[in-house]
Image (cartoon, rainbow, N blue to C red; front, top):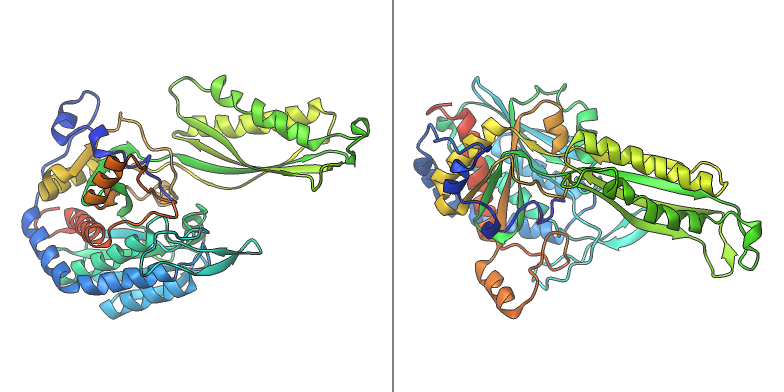
Length: 453
């Protein structure tokens, strides 16, 4: 679900050296193990196993499934993990999977991938493009892995393979989870509600990563707040229907909705301090059926974004107050206001992020970018935050996925680069998957490695 606002272009991010000197931020911490030796072993395994990961990626890409419908996807990953020797439980949080591998005493480490795709028609022209369709909200829709979760699943399996090939280099318990329905920001909550951290021990640390439109191979580590909180609000204004020629006999819910769409933006412009991130978007406004009937209700759907809990509450309260005031002004009944879902912002653990940045710098040099906590977070949202909120200190990495030659061509032609959620979004599989495997495997070794944790 994360969009490119999270993964800022490399030119806009401070270099590792500059970030170390910037006031108010942390700095990468030198690793306590031989990162290059570990990377050499990881890459040797990737050289052998990559064709299988490419085949897995193409299979998943061709057969995408929507949130909480990921039956085939979950079964495919569960089978792969069982073959590796993991103990796998399916149907956790409806369609989620939990794969456990114990390698002696030590920390429990969570590594997460998402399973779901988007209700979107793919237009990439890839030879393995998706033509799949599924039913969503009673309507048939095309389905496309336009956010990159297919890439994530391939590097998730690849990370498991790499760690098992290096069992002599780490100890502890791996908890690999395949989370459903990230795009609805509901899958993590569903898994937690189904006993994720009670049926199994709560992890000591967690890791995840997301592919974005930056150049393939770039790894971004940010301290502190990484993404925004997301809240969905549904509002129904209740009016009184009438003939279009007799508005005096009506209480017009479309007029109420129109007032609301305009007035609710003052929650940002007049109730939120300048410089404080907050977004109120009315994404859907549905009312009426024909031109000459004033309907008796209008339905609006909103998304709210914020970086901190105070602003998050202010937006929710402001939207609610504005909707009630608009209805009262029209002499209408109180609107129906529902808050069907949401997720808090992702907050990377600062100490863990500083250690991870040092490891990535040692592994990838200039292709590792460190972003201190004082720099702005992204505006997109991710429900990996629910695992963090449940008490798992974590780092969520950004991994570039665009072919540099493609980026140069688009720039020369003055064309925008396809980004996450675009029907044209198509990360370069091999460099993206390999860098994801390297990143997540090194992160696990950083906290579980026998050479110094």
